[in-house]
Structure formats: structure tokens, C-alpha cells
Image (tube, rainbow, N blue to C red):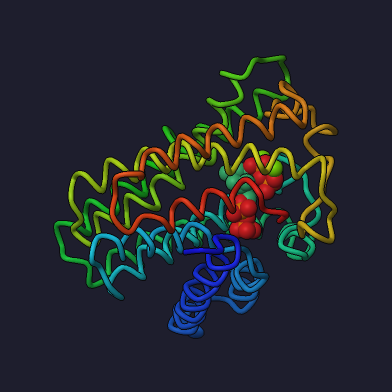
Length: 296
Ligand code: IPE
Ligand code: IPE
Ligand code: MG
Ligand code: MG
Ligand code: MG
């Protein structure tokens, strides 16, 4: 891949398009089984776009492991869980955000109660989608376990709790990384692990991509912290300056902007080193470069 920046964007776009088509089918399959207002409220944050990084990572990992289309339900499940986490993250009781994926947040349009329920629905649907997939049964159970662990009380939910607790105290870089590891890196690590496991990849690939995910996931969230102070709502599709106004403990609050940028680069280097000996893994090298250099 000579021009990493360009090629990785095309690589992601191609797979994101497939994810979007599969998501659309999934929502159509539910038909009219649920109340129209709930259906609208579920579709609303999913239709708004989003980079689809987690499902794309899952598919990319599966491709390296020799997998095919049967892995798509695992990828969809990741986007459903991620989108639920955003809907809840934006609630007044959490980050109290008005803008997400370029649109007013779900609770702004449909109300707080509906936003809670949309999150509940998305999370539940994720496990249904994997359960009825054609991933080989033994692997399917392991994929369910991975997603549950990555998103649950010792994963993303833990991180969200630490993030909220961080609003009340000063902390150091280790505290920030504990928040970021849980709230963001675990789902990103889960994404690549789910791809490898669903496709029956080797232990060597699983270990390498796990290490990649742990570091690339941290780099992704450190870059998010930087963008919160350097970007614009038009570019990001979400509000900026919120980490300061909500008194969040972030990479920028402990390291400053330049320090945080450097930290992201160091984490990216560790992620790249983790896949250096894996044939065909250059896509993951370009992916983490994109994570730290992204502008949205
Ligand atoms: C936002 O995730 C929340 C974080 C973990 C930083 P993304 O930056 O992947 O958001 P979307 O899916 O593209 O909207
Ligand atoms: C959110 O982190 C991580 C989640 C698990 C949703 P942030 O609160 O920084 O994400 P944004 O900036 O609102 O997207
Ligand atoms: Mg948050
Ligand atoms: Mg937030
Ligand atoms: Mg943020």
C-alpha cells in the first residue's frame, strides 16, 4: 500500500458500505413488529452515518483469518452496541450532548426515556443478530462472550463509570488510560478479536491483533480527546469543548494538546509493532495511522 492515507480510506469506505447495506436489511427484517416511533428512534442514530470503524475492523480481522461474509452479523452487532453506547453517552445524565453524527441527539428529538430504550433495544438486538448468524456454533458462542466482555461491566460500561467519576477528581496519565482502555479500547479490541474468532483464525493472529487493538484503541480515544479541543462541530458532527466544560479527565487535560498528540503517536507505534510480523497486516498499520491523524 504505497499511499496509506488514500488507500485506507478507500478500504474502509468499501467495507463500511457493505455494513450500511446489511444494517438497512436488518432493520427492514424487523418490519412492523415494533412501535413505529421506536422504529424511527432506532433508525435515527444508525442512519446518521458514523465511521463504522468497529465493524470494519471486525471484517478486516476476519479477512486476515480467511473468513468471509458469514462474519457480517458480528460486525453489525459491534455497530449496534457502539451506537447504543453513544446514545446513552449523550444523555443529560451522562455527557449531556446535543449533537451526534451531525444531527441533534436521540434524546433531543425523541426524549430521554426513548433514548434510554433505544440503547436497550440496540444492545439486545446485537446479541440476537449474532445468535442467529451462520458463524459455526462453537465460534458463535465465543463471539457472544467476546462482545459481552468488551461492552459489559468489566469493559465499556466500566470505562463510562470511570469517565463520570473522573469529572470529580484530578488524575494522572494512568488514570486517563484506565478510562480510555475500558470505555474505548476494549470494544475496539473486541472488534478484531471477534473477527478472528468468527473466522477461526490462528492463536498467533489473535494475540497480535489483541495487542494491536489495546494500543490502537487507546490511540483512538486520545485522538478523540485532542479533536474535542482542536476541531469544529461542522467537521466532527458532535459538539466540541465538552471535555473542558464537563471537567473531564482526558489525555489533553493531563498532557496538553501537543503532549496528547505525542502520546497518540507512541501508542500507534506500539500497535504497529504488534502486527509487524503478521503477513498481510499492513492494513492495520494504515488503520492506526488514520486513527491518530484523523480529523473526524
Ligand atoms: C466516538 O466513536 C466515541 C469514542 C469512542 C471516541 P467514533 O469516533 O467511532 O464515532 P462514530 O461511530 O464515527 O460516530
Ligand atoms: C465515549 O467517550 C466513549 C463511549 C463509550 C461512548 P466520549 O464521551 O469522549 O465520546 P464522544 O466524544 O462523546 O463521542
Ligand atoms: Mg463520554
Ligand atoms: Mg461523550
Ligand atoms: Mg470525546
